[in-house]
Image 1: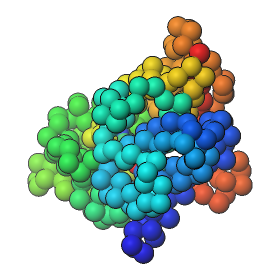
Image 2: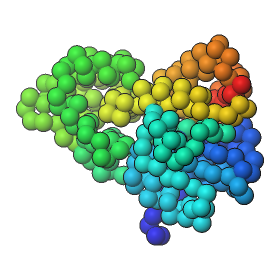
Image 3: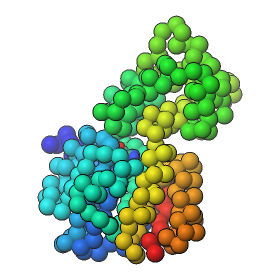
Image 4: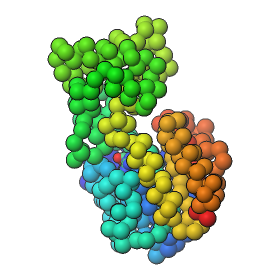
Length: 302
Ligand SMILES: C[S@@+](CC[C@H](N)C(=O)[O-])C[C@H]1O[C@@H](n2cnc3c(N)ncnc32)[C@H](O)[C@@H]1O
């Protein structure tokens, strides 16, 4: 149990004060946390919706759900935890017997717990297998993409999901190296990226493998398609006056949120509460560097 709580505490919830303020929570509300992770936001949300409220927490990751189940055990009566993908929000709500909800919240990407576990293969900073699945019951791993896709397909992933300017060079070297032996670890990929890019770019502000790892992770988990579907469903499942809030961590995600909000607004479905995304305070950015790229957008169902 101690170990479990220690892991849960590794992830600091991002922009928690802003989320609580903009969700306009009150007792009795039904809230979906579509990315419950280690339950950092949900613990605080529950304080505002009890008594009488209900929280439906979704995550693709069994291990996170196990942690959260223990962490939220004293609220068990009010909480339903579901292993699933928020792109199936409509089906999940049918499963738990709910029609409409007051709030849907998404805090995208990975938790620090996932990122810091070498076995999950998300980080280029630790040696690990090329896994990168958020849902370890799903089929395709990073290994499969890196060792089986053709050069053009890899290059396209690196460009589309990582905006990696050296996508062609990196894809070429990955495909050349895998002819000698399959590429099987995070450090091999990180080394190949280092060698593929021009010398001058090897010591920049961010690690040269950052964009490659982001791109492969997005492809493995089909994150952008899930986000697009998830937001659309969230908007349709909100009660009138209900709110949807999304924290994104890179421009590809933020763009999907912005475009979906814009089109739902033009259909008269929502009012956008944050014309510009909210950013974490500088104090939070110093205390929690992983919050630095966070952007929060909120909309209200009409
Ligand atoms: C940044 S963490 C959430 C942290 C959480 N708000 C907290 O404070 O502990 C993102 C979580 O969303 C999950 N996730 C990402 N995409 C998902 C999806 N499409 N469906 C369900 N869960 C998803 C990840 O597995 C991860 O646990």
